[in-house]
Image (cartoon, rainbow, N blue to C red; front, top):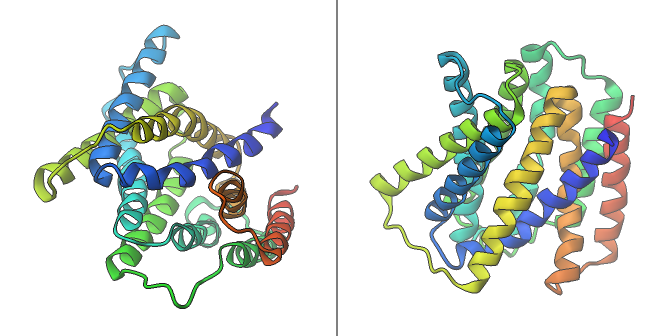
Length: 282
């Protein structure tokens, strides 16, 4: 069953890119994320109580979990949502974030003492090449500078969060750890709202459906699987599967949003798949 988890994760995580645009079209990104993680925290809290897992943890574990939530749910998702809300093309944002495995591979050696083999590096480079082919870089696209900066911040944050989460290994139950991480993300976005923006959410049917998808399938489903995979595998191998996400998102956009899918995209998907296989196989 564990071998199926990466494939489930890829499908759920990729689908988040499809529903991000309708969310930011009906709200500011930070109010949407504060709303999302309030209910995510509530859900994990109720599940922890139901499964009789104590939510009382040490001060050290509390700080570590909150910080992880700020990095992942706050800076990473906040950067992605904000960049898309001000006009950054979703594909280019996804491609920049897809650099994460390269940074993780470069840092997991000196920080986590993980051995990153030549084979893994070859797989990672193939994965990046395939992702670039799938997403493309439309030279004529007007990329907002703030959007580019926000996406780079998101890239650094998700890389740091992945290594941080692996380094902690605090053995907290996943539901409890996710509860405090969701609180960290929610508090981060509330502070952004208080000090920097005028919050608004238009509770249209589209917004509710897209938000429901991101709460239940992405935050409860995909994120829990990701934390499980990080705990069970090396950080460098775990994040290599992220290279499949841009290609999978492109296929989903073709199926559900009638966006184009070219022969070059299909070639890129194949190269990415080969790269991920090389980087993750034993």
